[in-house]
Amino acid sequence: MTSKFTKIKTEKIDSIGKIILNSPETLNIIEKETFTEINEAFSRFESDDVKIILITAVCGISKKGKKVFCAGVNLKKYNEKIELAKTVPARFKEELKSARSLLTRIEKLNKPVVIGINGFITGGFFELALACDMVLVSESAAMSLNEINVGLIPGYGGIHRLLKLLGKNRAMEIIATARHISANEALKLGIASKVFKDREFELKIHEFCRELAMKPSNSLYLVKNTMQKILNGEDIEEVEINSFLKAICFEDAQKAINNFLQS
Image (cartoon, rainbow, N blue to C red; front, side, top):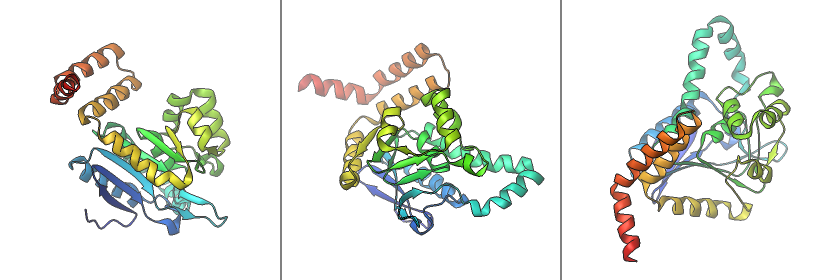
């Protein structure tokens, strides 16, 4: 898969489509182009035969020697955004909605999206991680929502996603203090799905995704879609019954059941 991406690169390994943040020299700071390119990569993989989409990064090293997955948004350009918000608030809102739409797309995508975090992740890209279906982290990884430190608040949906995940008290404490969450705490809180040792991280996340890709694609999507509908407040029984009805009618189910009975 070839591309003219400047902020990311993409790879396809077996049935896994990889989106890799690829600006380590800037600590993978989020620019407008970052989300635009990720959106384009999703469009390519959505129509491809990949079963799982994995987001990773070529980590940068901070001045303090810290391994950084993504340092959040580019604050050097925020004077322009402040001016836009004050002078043309309607346009500012539209730009923010456009950025937020990528995270909503992740939740609605017809394939599971897994993120593998092996460094420090903060701000907008941590918000993106909260929209992913599964979050795999290395034991030395850490994360935070640091917007409050510069007088802002999470703007890409991190507030409502963390609120749903953790409840008001925990979410408020994490956002209000902007403190760092370790890999093990993220696992305990339910933010992370798995923690792997640093030296095995790349191997383990690919093993995880390959195992996931062996599952029936239709079933994986139906589980994802069912969960999302329930989280959005739709009637639980109605959603689950309709999803099960779809699942049992798929050829995947008929083949899998027959294979099981013949084994």
